[in-house]
Length: 492
View 1 (cartoon, helix red, strand yellow):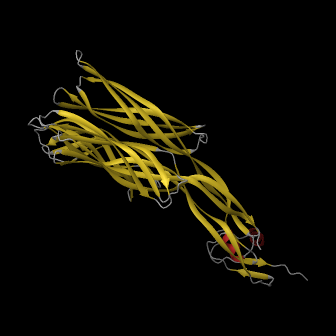
View 2 (cartoon, helix red, strand yellow):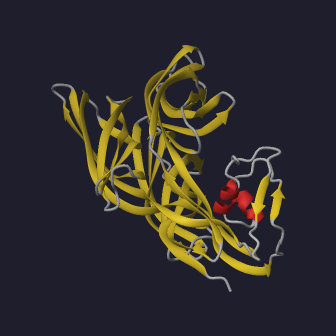
View 3 (tube, one colour):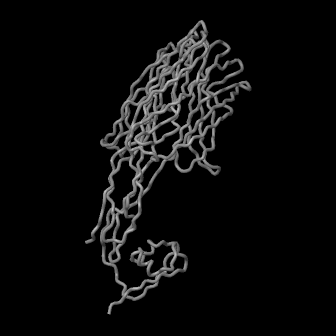
């Protein structure tokens, strides 16, 4: 019976994940004659892992800017709570579920005297949990030992405040505001994870009795998240969301000025990856018995250092409805972007579309909202699998030729490499029948070209050091036509 030596690695990290979509609907009254802009912001309230499924719940804040029957511009907002679940075979009650909600689309429809907004929400689900691996470290076998890196995840979180204040010409009322978080850097320090970036704050306001104006501000933020396992040089990833916004406008009619202040509450969730080196047996054999090995294969997931690219793009924009020279472009709101990483013969590119809502005043004195889409393709220096995020800001539009709109936008692109460490280790061995014994004093073996010392030793059923000692002049990997000599001592 073979004697086997084993050890157990215990870690914590990503154990699975999935994605899902759910639709959340909200009804507004029939006073909204023409909807100019519609916005939906989803906030996660809870997430729970169960047996084979993940349940999550949240609240969607709906807001519309509309023109009533008297062509007066108004606003309305409502909140809707929702719950959903997604099937996930790897989910178990002991796991921690992290869910990222994104508003993928907002559609508007009228039914009778009511207006309905439907938000299509995307949910990216990642499961974290404990994992154990019992692996072979030695015993009565000739073993190939290798150092295998393992990643252990440490979850942490924190909150912060960000604020901004700016002066504008006099405005009557704030109709709509939107916030897009752009995380541009993560740094691990001793006991702290630092997440930095900026928030694109967009404000749509009423100017005068029937005119619209929009403002855009990039508000920087910095969040320090306590984490005992964080240290300089460790990798991490984070997600930052805006949980609350308070915007105030102090008007001075005599001076014709207005001071707008914004206070934002931020929440951050981070994950720090600690790399541990484990001495494992990755292959083994016996010199005198056949051996059946059992292997365990898996992977550890992590994240690398972020890189950023800023690009100004321009071109002909696609429109949801026609415009002409009688239309006056008054404001641009709800700037956003969708993008994917694409690899081709010419390199790696970020391709997607920049979008915004263009507020137009028609010749008849009525307003309407026109959805603007500008496709883009930007070359980026990226290798391997990367997560990509794009902030769209500074969108402008003008009508050079009647019915055709040229648009420009600034894209702030951030890439974060996704690390994946694959491993295959021996976890068990079963002894088989004895191997036939060769009693010749000398054997000559013709190995396969390209074999290394371990492959040759395994074929010969001899320890690598013995093969090297008997063949001091052989070079690895083995070349075509080389011979290997095995000497066996004879006892008289």
